[in-house]
Figure (spheres, rainbow, N blue to C red):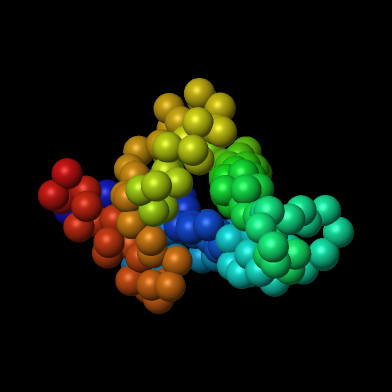
Length: 149
């Protein structure tokens, strides 16, 4: 039978969960976190009218969205840093190898924020969003990836 790392981390932009695997038992939740930057709508976070600037034209109520891409990138960067901080915290308390499941578009950013020592301990990574998968099924996804990888 294929074995898994004792610590599994599943995350996306808005949610984080770390689990410890125990033989024959459901994974134990070590830490959970939610990030408003990853779950809230941008329009809900940016409601202040101050600082908005006109986009030109005759209608003065129109405003430019020139800063929106920068803001989206900054919010994603914050999420990635928060995820890496949570991973570091969990893995500082728990030695050994670990596995990570995260959407492919944020996986490189997360790994870049981790220390070389923690990246070296990473035993299995999945470019998959497993945050909403029931806890008892998470290990199965990692096992399937291990067997096919």
